Amino acid sequence: MTQTARLVITPVRGFRQLSTFIRLPRRLYAGSAGYVPPLDMEQRNLLDPAKSAFYHHGEAQYFLAWRNGRAVGRISAQIDNLVRDAAPETELTPQTGFFGALDAESPEVVAPLLEAAAEWLRAKGMNSMLGPWTLNSNGEYGTMIEGQQAAPMVMIPWHPPFLSEAIEAAGLTKEMDVLSYQMEMGPHAENAHIVPKGLSLGEGRLGALSVRPMDAKNIERDGEILRTLYNDTWRETWGFVPYTEDDMSGMIHEIKPILKSEHFVLVEQDGEPAGVALVVPNVFDVSGDLGGAPSPLGWAKLGLRLLRHDFHSARVILLGVGKSLSGTALGALLPALLISELMKRGHSLPYRKIELGWVLETNTPMRRLIERIVPEPTKKHRVFRRSL
Image 1 (cartoon, rainbow, N blue to C red):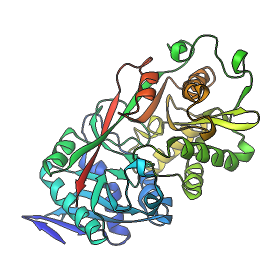
Image 2 (image 1 turned 180 degrees about the vertical axis):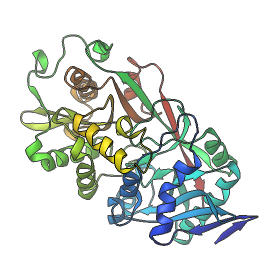
Image 3 (image 1 turned 60 degrees about the vertical axis):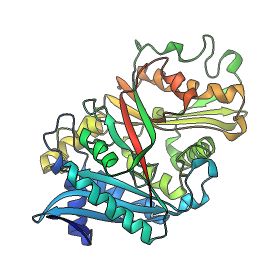
């Protein structure tokens, strides 16, 4: 247990404290401009050891900060066993530990929470601490440093401006920024110039490539294709942690009720998967006014909205290109073709905006591609590092 003045940091024990941990951000940030609480149910799927796929390959300890018997902050400390298999290029060594789920009522709460996470990781043999991500880089990622007033998006964490400043004041240094871009969709969207004129999937010079949506009867098979191509594409990228079969199965189970076949774009070359992208509807569109724990009437409203698919925005959460195309002209073009194909779906889907998130600031090719349409990112999140 770590104690500073009247502030006490304790490890989370039992169902009741875990519930406090899950619900805390919506109490801390209630009334903050730009903040919309996620559903507690969604957060429990992310954090509860009994539900989260992370615990199949990692371990974590949650901490709460208390002042006068009242929770005023939280943090997670975790070790991901998948990191031991990560390529050296990811800069995630086997002794890299992580923190996440960092939220605080005020700046002075942050340093003691970070120290509690560092102590736990140090005791586990870790020599550096990276974060925040919850619970790894395939979950909620980074501390928001820009975009607090932008529309909320699924799986994109919100933080008050003081949080990143307090993290730096505690001695952590910037490791990487990740960027999110919001694009207009629909028949009038200005996105035609994302690919060279005359190039379209399945036509002309690209006639050898076929494109298809998700096969609802074989969603698990398509999920495995998506997982394989995603892992192939990003394996040597900074911060990469592979998607496991359990991770993909859990994600599909969670989003299946709101998934349409058009959300999935698979490009095949000679019958073999070449590129893939997945977009998911923005749950905040239908839950944002209901709070984190809707009333019975709120749940009924949510069910009706889901049934009607009352979404107006969505997010690209996974995009991948086959390893066999790495370094080729087609491999370089496929991300643009995949994004262009998703944008065309604006004719059949109700979305007015689509967000591409967590683009590494160092990923110059992808940034140049996206910034042809959106010159500046809508949101920016920062990952920090500390030596232990």
